[in-house]
Amino acid sequence: MRNNLDRQLSTVRNLGILAHVDAGKTTVTERILYATGTTHKRGEVHDGTTVTDFDPQERDRGITIFAAAVSCEWAGHRINLIDTPGHVDFADEVERSLRVLDGAVAVFDAVAGVEPQSESVWRQADRHGVPRIAFVNKLDRVGADLDTAVASIRDRLHPVPLVVHLPIGAEDGFTGVVDLLRMRALTWSDGSDAAVEDDVPDDLLAEALRRRRLLEETVAERHPAALEEFCDRETLSAGTLAAALRDLTRTGDGVVVLCGSAYRNRGVEPLLDAVVAYLPSPLDVPPVRGVSGAAGGVPGGEERTADPSAPFAALAFKVTATATGRLTHLRVYSGTIGKGDAVWDSGAGRTERIGRILRVQADRHAGLERAVAGDIVAVVGLKSARAGSTLSAPDAPVVLEPPGVATPVVSVA
Ligand code: GDP
Image (cartoon, rainbow, N blue to C red; front, side, top):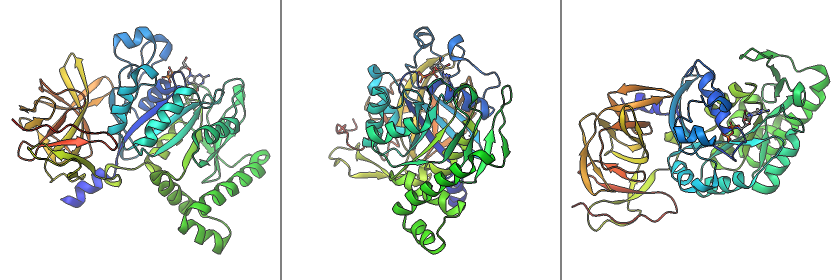
């Protein structure tokens, strides 16, 4: 049983998309939902039909104000997408979303490179230890340049960039990428969503080989197993490279960089493949710490791991009013809950009952029997829970303490 649950959990990715306003976060989100078959009609930001921006105020203002969680599937994995606001006025919401993520995609504009808000969100993600991959978007724009954007990421944010794509064509002629891991060309034609895979074009081969070599050297310098293989064979196999990229991403010792144009639907499938391959599952992240909700609890004295059979503990990260009712969006850290179960709400200091449990899938909600550790779900029926409340088993009450943030001690009445 435990093995089955672990297997399921290892295929979950709790993902956030971080960006400066206008870098293309909404468009990337939209294209992800489309590519994963979650939506069938492609929403356009400019006509106000995007799925994640469903709040009317948000549509009016044309910026992403409220974080919404949407679940989709890719390559046998469940990706819970937590939209984080890019606008600087909503830093608290970004902070709260970062607490419930296991990994993130940072979206950059290929013309503007790193912008002030991308910098502040990046630093917040650093503080929360969120592993990231970078997607350099808008490669189709006039003046777009991957190398300049990567230099700006390196110079201003200081990660070790691990660039796995070489663009094919530039600006309006940007048609695809060379995947430097598999040394294959992926191209997209207008009006078609699926990539066509082919040999690397002759005129790009020397440059692709040079960049592959650079990637191997950068990885080998930072990864002991890769270094051993590199010393033995003077090269790295795609398998070793991929495993090392995964390790370096998860430890924060490197950031995989991909590129594309979300607007033209180029590069979104490779981005999803990278999310699945490199970013961690709930099993791969450190346990969350907290303080016992019972009187006399010691800050940091409680630890909750992604174990479905442990006492229940979850963090409410957003509350939304919808036609279905008041939805409390939860990140479950440990244990399992079912409909009708009682939970202790740290914010209100009282016990409530769970109503329906839902998985939010774009504009639809699917009913669930239970929610288990590692998952992100929405619950109907909680009257007092607020964003930031911990919900936990009444006989094992806990107030979760995010890294670096002091948690007030709340006693159970
Ligand atoms: P957000 O503020 O980060 O959510 O950015 P949006 O997704 O709303 O995108 C901002 C603007 O950039 C919109 O007008 C998009 O249509 C446009 N945009 C998004 N991705 C691309 C792209 O790949 N290429 C181009 N040329 N424009 C894009």
